[in-house]
Every structure is written in C-alpha cells, then in structure tokens.
Image (cartoon, rainbow, N blue to C red; front, side, top):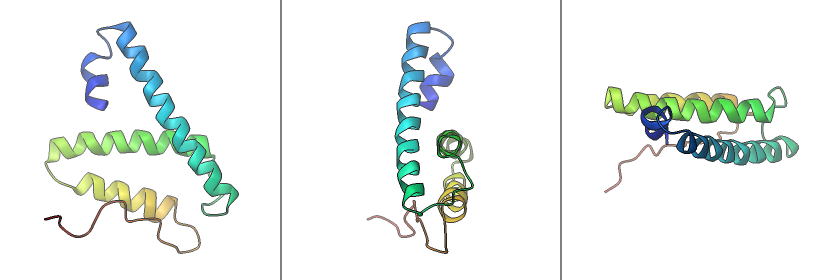
Length: 105
C-alpha cells in the first residue's frame, strides 16, 4: 500500500481517497487492539491508543520502504525492537518477537 500511495496517490483523487480509507481502517483496527490491551493492563497507559496506532502504522510503512532501499532486514528488526520490545512492553513481558529469529526452510 505504501508503494501505491507514493506512486499513484497524487495522480487520481478517487484512488487516493480509497487508499486513505484503507489506511484509516488499518489504523482503527490497530487502535482497537491497543485499547483492549490498555484495558487489560497489557500496555502502558502513558500512550494514547489512537496516537500509538498512527505511530505504529507510519513506522511500519517506513520500515517496509527502508527495507527495499537497504535490501536488509535491519529496518524491520528496528521496528520490532522499538514497537514490540520497548513501547508495547509493559512489566518486562516480551510482546514479540514480531519477526522470527530462525530461518524458514
């Protein structure tokens, strides 16, 4: 979706609006999960769930873009470390890993 947004978002208003709606739906779903996690004391209450949903989606899209440019998993590892092991980690439980540490065969 990030690639489509970058390449076609400015060329067609209907297409841009549809992409925006899809991003909004994803952000809302992330926000719903974060609200539930907050209610169950699984994540810190110092972050607003909707702000955090924006941050997570934007960071995810940025990590995907950087992975293409760098041809490495480093941006994904950084995303995993900051989002799942730092921001969403409350009370020392590990919220991840989001990425597997073993190779798939």
